[in-house]
Length: 451
Image (cartoon, rainbow, N blue to C red):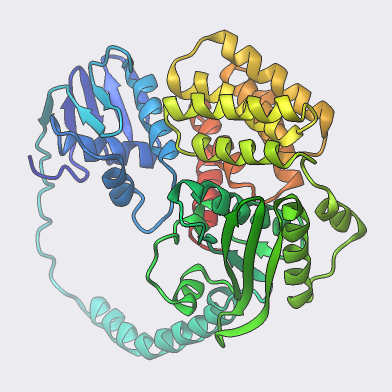
């Protein structure tokens, strides 16, 4: 089947019009967000085929780094709008660990091309305008050149306080320990994000460079950041060796580097020291509150933190079985430290994800809400807890409260990409297309570059 592009087509009982962004069935018409429509068109072009998730992500979100949950929620939105059921699908079939397949009949429709306009005789007035056009060419060229200079100085040139933390390499000799090095990366990103003077690339974007063969200057220019943090982690028998270095993208010069050989119990102290030294190297001033936030550690139980990191790695797979494993691991962390607010907040998100993505009922929604409330009681200023509460409100159908909770999470961490994406998805579901589009563009910008 040839590519549809913007051509309309019939999908079962629905008339799909990609150019208008609409789907119509009888007197009912629904509007599809552009990326959701793009996913539908991509599947329709391959109707009957199993299309891998990474293939869809690579084509529909080409040039951006997005998680599979974005695609999963797009498919969920298609099913909701078109009246499909994931458990007994008529339109889109999910094949676990393989991808998606459009199983409904697809019939392309021809679009009649407009008749060409008759030729019009050229008169004197047209000749005058042609002369003016020729004279305007050099003027426009000069203006474009001036705008290019302004664009480079204001937009393309990275902000001096912009920074990306690349995934720390796992030197432990065990691929199963990737969760620990990834957790170290995310914790440092979170710590640096607490410094308002720094502009930190989101975790989602940074993790996209795990297996990149690009040089650090190439990555820096692509992300439009002034500096990059890279490092490695080696963990064995209760000890940890961590190396970290801060590199200036423009000169490829080391601004700071350090190696830590410590007991595993000192992991939080190492993270604080790395964040503090990076902030100093970039001459970022820390407010008293920011310094207090950096000095706080999420738990005093190293084993609980290890369970949390393993749970986070499972949760971010956005698969039903992995989400259940995440719930078990977060629960194990809380058994060791009931005051571990971050683990409780992520547990609440995992309960809510059961409902949002995997078809669980209201009991899981209630558990998500209660668990998020408990996390907030432990730490009222924890962004993850407000995000979890927003997700719990959303799966209970309380959109206004969900939006307020997401906004509170973003007040505490302005570049919290998960909260930004959740607001965009919520607004799309409510039909607030313009506002949803603005939030989605912000999410895309965080995944591509720093503004």
